Amino acid sequence: MDTDLISFETLLATRDSAYWVMWGAIATGVAAFGSVMTLIVAGAALNTWKQQEKTKIRSELKRSLLALDYAVHMMPDTWNSLTAQRVNIALTQKAFRFDGDEDAIVAMIELKKCWHEALSAWVMCEGQLKNTNLTKLWNELSESYLEFLEGKATKLKILEKLAEMHSVKFIFD
Image (cartoon, rainbow, N blue to C red; front, side):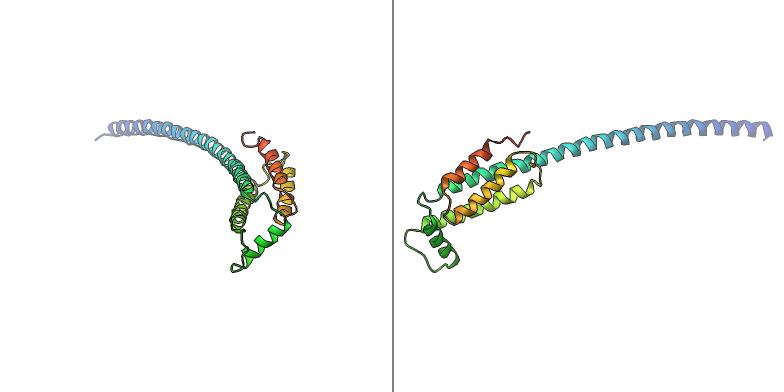
């Protein structure tokens, strides 16, 4: 084999190598572009998911307020401080019950469960609703609820606060 043939074969091998390097670089560029596009789509999807979760949490608050409204409606119309004391005694001392208070006891248990769910939903909102009138209404409702448990507030007072809260549009704002 002479040196010219060896040089020629080396030249061909180098040219083929450069050709494959070029196609490798093109493939790397396409892969990098695909990675950037995937990153953009993933970021958009993550933002959409975050908005969906916020909407879901707000919907849960609205649903829990409706359940609380129903639970308040189920409380006796004759709710006063004496009835509240009797029901609280019956709840804390299981063996001691007054006649005719069974419906009030069941309603009170349901009311407390619904209040707990509403309170949990409120906490889950994590301040999303600070720019609305809802924070003030929630504080007023909390005070009225505590007064109601003691028999110092009427059902109507709580139902009015709940109606005000229902009128605030905060799910899809």
